[in-house]
Image (cartoon, rainbow, N blue to C red; front, side):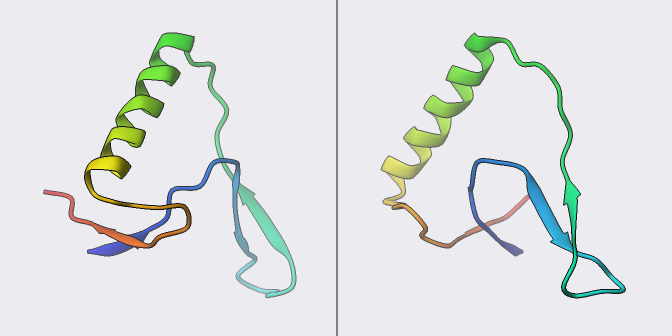
Length: 63
């Protein structure tokens, strides 16, 4: 299991050779508005059902 944070926006990580630099790590692909809204609704329902509040850490098991 790994700890997950849900955060909107592009991701970045420290460069392997220089801890003071950052490498952007994201992809761009257009989404249908309906699909984006559905994903947001599912995320919000998950948070409500599991009492996850803003900036709460939680665990996700992938099976």
